[in-house]
Length: 166
Length: 430
Image (cartoon, rainbow over all chains, first blue to last red):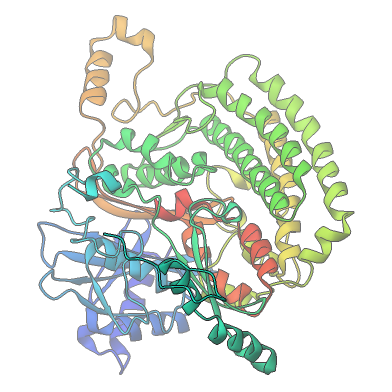
């Protein structure tokens, strides 16, 4: 895990990159020995590419979070792993529910394919440029994004033939 | 009412309308097609075949849309979600300690790992120190669970390859492990043994002796499996050199665990980033060479021996001390204190009714499960229920590698690869 100074250096490096610019990094957080960098949604692909060059070459997890009632509500976390230095770094991007668009990182990281589909399925974040953005766990004709905090639990009809005819 | 059949001419017998209709159908176009297939076009024909969601060789409710060119697999589309039960959503509605039994039901072959990933994440958030004895007890149960999971994998995989007897041998040893689980926790599966801050109870009298007996017998049993399978020409021919995938492609696809180690990359979180006192134990990481099905098979089989080594070291070096943290804001006070201490009673009441409160924050922590990196992301908003729990299940990520592995090989090798991939659909669908 990078220490607080190291985290700031990484953030500086991202800001200094000509492809990213000063506004690419929205903030850093060092919490419980873990580093998190919040990146502007539009810059997520070049930011991850830059981190890959820095050694974080394994994308271990992509998952979504609903920050309800805080805005922007939806967050997507990218857990980066440096296997030679055994170091982890979380990259976070947040998008509002009104326009939940984020560039897909699947072209650079094939592992993100199913995980981005899951985030789309559960939170409704649309990953632009994803080769096959469909629901993955919920049925194709399902309405709504069940993992959002304002989505109620229960009341789900069981898909039996008997219920279908009702 | 009924139409009279057409008047029969003297030389032909009378026919019903139905017979006439039947005769009007000609099979000629189909016969022409069949004749056409022989003309060198058969290699162009693609057949899309649906495997599952209840195919005996899919190890769960997995559905594969397989496009075949003759016997050769050209494209695989896994379709999942059939056993999605919304466990992550359910977890948001439960107090921290009540989440554990729900999460254990995700990957139903590695329930101790599910609980461990979640507990380490919550312990990191709440900054709880886990006593050394609890860490060792956790290691013992985790490694027993790893052996158990590998035994189920070995038995069912051998079944897919046509070796039925292996299944019974593997389940014989699995039964011994489940008996041990029952002894320490009262449950054979989904034991709820791991708690935030330690384990729920110390091991009972007689557990150590029974575990020792198991540890003594297990390597010889694994030798038997080795002899049975490594000496079997059919198994070797089905596995060797099939569905190879190199370490670089596996890393791109996010594959971890035995599948990655089979390709020669010795990445194992127990060695790389030790947790729960794994640094105290002397064990090796089995690695393969080329990353074919044989390597995947051999690596898992070798891991059984290493797990046995870890268990016997943990049992011999089991330190004294508490089995769960003494922090009363996290763990229940011992039963006898309730009779004498008002404070203990209040803590007990608060924990049982409301549950522990965890400081706000977000933590992702990962452990090495039998199938690879099992990560748990927990977000706390400061209340007594987690605001978000996400499991990065290794089966879910590893499944993406199936098409890269099996495309271009025979459908029989696809079955073998699926067996060696060892997906658990409970973990994939969650």
